[in-house]
Amino acid sequence: MESMPFLHANQIFNISFEEDLAFSEVRAILDYLLSRNAFSRKVQETEGFYIIEVEDASFGVWVQEMDVIIERR
Image (tube, rainbow, N blue to C red; front, top):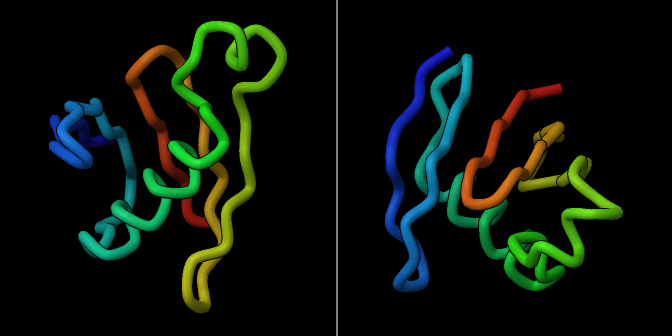
């Protein structure tokens, strides 16, 4: 599994993934998570896993603090 820092919306996220992802996919996933306040500690206490559809692909996404693990489904 690869890991890399990713700057998006003036925030740095640690993205981990197994398959290559397009930047547009990563940005869409992060936008979805930001819109759901997924990086809030309060939200992370009750939620941490998301299924996110981007274009024609589906991703399983885990969030913990600013770490994001992305798996193509």
